[in-house]
Each structure stands twice: as structure tokens, then as C-alpha cells.
Length: 58
Image (spheres, rainbow, N blue to C red):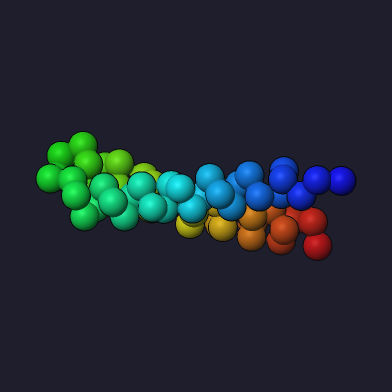
């Protein structure tokens, strides 16, 4: 059994985080700030969703 599927979401969240950090550093306001906030909030939203989901099952 391959371990590739279990790395799909962590890699996607890492790429979103790196993009958000680069957008914050390189971007000059406007749409870059919005993209930065969305990209940097995506891991936090994912964590909150997983915690809320795990609380329901127990």
C-alpha cells in the first residue's frame, strides 16, 4: 500500500502556506493581501475543522 495519498493534504497546505508568506512579502497591497490572508488562513481553518470533527465522534 502506497503512502502517497496520506501526503496529499499536508503538501497542499505547505504549498498554500509558502504562497501566502511570499504574497505577504512580495505583494504590494490590494489583491495580494487578500490572497495572503486566504492562503495563510487555510491551514488554520483545516485544523479547526479537523478538531471539531474529531470532537463529534468521541
